[in-house]
Image (cartoon, rainbow, N blue to C red):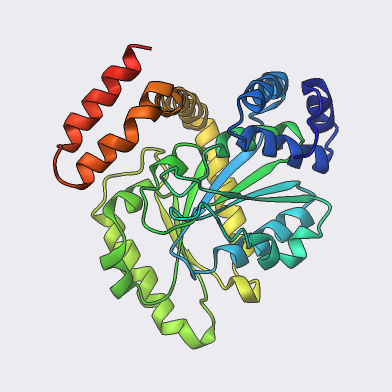
Length: 328
């Protein structure tokens, strides 16, 4: 393991916009080592006054819909406007091996070389919601490093996307032409959370399918309650690979930000997200404390075996383990 720097060195490097130090700091906050957790807390406390100034955009969609291609096209467009863009991509982790592919950097060959862009792939670990455990902290570090826009790509493999919505200012659902079939597979909950739906791969060969998809999504949205932001959800099309419709997507996002800042919704949403984050941290810390307890570690294997063999109810095993933990 590379030798850790002091918290001051990390903070100063991040504030200076040093991308190598930023990457190393994200590695620290992702670490599960006790010493790194204390260092991570010190780093985050140091950069706190300099965070929160970026626009946070979540992008979700099923695998193969073209999220990485869209993000590269959008990121390239934004950097052409002089904006600094950080991309936090999330790859699914194998529950069997703990490994992940982490291939998003290789799929964004142009953007990864852009001096105004920073791309950081992370693994989901065992966290739910299609985002990594420390995505919020990584966003804070990127904001302190001076990035204007944070793009968060989720794995989009069917988990609840509530966490994504709960940490971003604008939530975009990317889909493909052929909405008639896709609407059956899209959960109502996601449709209620999104701020825009974009139909990708809308080239000349899919013109009719694209029009049908847009119409179907618009009709579906009429059945949903009004957006909490007060801004009607827009449906539009693009072809990320042909770089068509990308500027229009950014204009839509920028217009949403301006409207919600004027109405006060933007700041209200950010404040509620902080409270949600606090409660999420309570759950994480309690879970960590539980599984790190020596009494729990000792008793867990035998109880797992009893549950597996059908000799003990899972609820009974859980109660016994929690009782052991509470006696610490």
